[in-house]
Picture 1 (tube, rainbow over the protein chains, first blue to last red):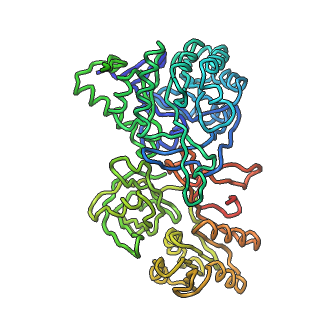
Picture 2 (cartoon, chains in turn red, green; picture 1 turned 135 degrees about the vertical axis):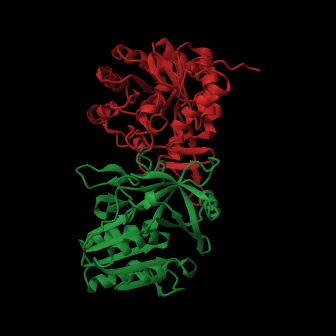
Picture 3 (tube, each protein chain N blue to C red; picture 1 turned 180 degrees about the horizontal axis):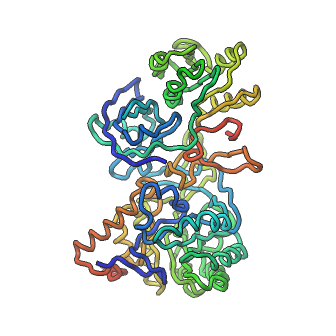
Length: 303
Length: 259
């Protein structure tokens, strides 16, 4: 039985990774699971310089999952390179850095640094709904994504480049095509859906930032649909995510066209969810006599 | 760092309407737990509600952990319905910022409402190490809990207040604490409770230059320091920054955080 997948040149021992922002830099979850078992780890969104993040409350629960507005709090790439990367490298898993910025120059300067680090790939975050400048501003149109991606591509010459896309658009295949046309090696999605929860006693939004990204089991069907649409629109591999909490969910994404999958806020509810998902995928393979997990990618038959 | 374990619910008790005390068998958690730490408790097997519930540890007794919670929403409602003998999925003990148990001379321990619970294990562990003055404030008589538990520890003083005077002293616990401190200085204040109370205690402690440890609450995602959801402004360094209640806390030096 072969669970290995090749995500745009990143050879993963299985299709399961963890979504940026839900797993820190791995240290906390290493107390609960064996990181060596993961196909890859995607780091917390990392920027050129330290980002303080948004005020609290940053999180609230909603039916089907949760809203978050962390605001990409992170210590910056230099700190990551010095303190987190050497530690992460001790594990037998692929390391993909989620890269975020506020301007094209910031993305480019960051990726110039990332290009030289001992990492296996970069996930370019063009889709965080919680920071006002950058990210989302570039991420919603064909032209915007193409522009940032092509500038980044010029400096990110030695690493696979995956562009993470937002679902907060009319047609996700447009930005996906922008990434592909600019030379991205893969696309990932979905990022969170922009939501809002109101405290009816205070008549104010619960989150300090008013709105936040919706994630959790409630977004899964949206994610599966969008991964399917992207798989029909672009030829580059897709890293699928949104609401995955078990092997069956991961299989759905792969049938829809994802080469690999990320587990996000599911980690919060169960720190062992990623390992259980890997086990669930293997169980599915046995049940259906699947020799090679890659053989199921994009094989959904539409009605 | 905590462990994730299935714990048998040994005993369940409704203390007053809507407030439950659970005793669970959790040797792996009990052996490492410190006063002020909390648990992340799974309340549903169906994934709805989605997140675990952070609940503070009330008492550590051998292999048993006790926690007390108030039913406030869907999650705590489901938790309250779990039957004795059933297993509960718990991660704990969590939080690196704990109440500092050491030798003190004279301390004030002040709690409000459901915030009194993490103070019980602390008070127990401070027994013999300090002169203990405990102030417990409640909104009204219907919400008064655990008075006997605190009393049984053997305190120098226990003051129980209700906002409306429906039980024991009328008024806010902090005012009784202040009056006592004016007569007899303390070398540490330990506090946990609703935000307005914590703000007042913090302001008083800073103004009078009294060391003070407060336990904070914030909406949490993971509870282990990965999601960075439970931000609190830390002002102890050169520049203010966001720390996290689940990891650096939940107990902080009052002067180190802005609340």
